[in-house]
Image: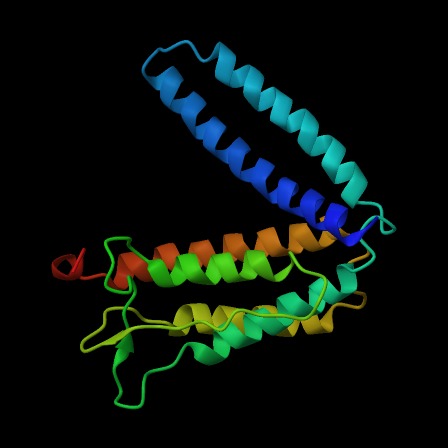
Length: 197
């Protein structure tokens, strides 16, 4: 498979997963309010069929020969994220929402960077940039500890993923674990008076 087709299939795979998640939530909302979800359900089934076809293509090692490189990108990206989760030189903490209305912007960036790390066959990472504030209520230690654990696990794998779907599943597992830590940290530390500040 040429690089453009490889990239487009991977990008499409990630896009379909997001569409399926959104449509599933929409169907739940429709059913909750007793609206007709027939058309939405059909669209969802169409996406699921396309997803099966794409997964079959990307499960073939010959279709994504750069899976090993992408796997090493993933490890390198997680290491960069881990290393950047520190206090600034004055001891100020990271602002969880980067002075934006969006809550937990830090976690959104972490998840986006991890997702992007397996998109490209060449070596490349995103370098996180954080805003710092006095009296931050964001405790980065739980997610930093988790990232250390993940890096160790990935480096100890007896074999690198054989195909892109294996790598994609590893990435999804990592994202779910980070989301779990994010929810727990937020519930424990987020101060109501700091919300949307």
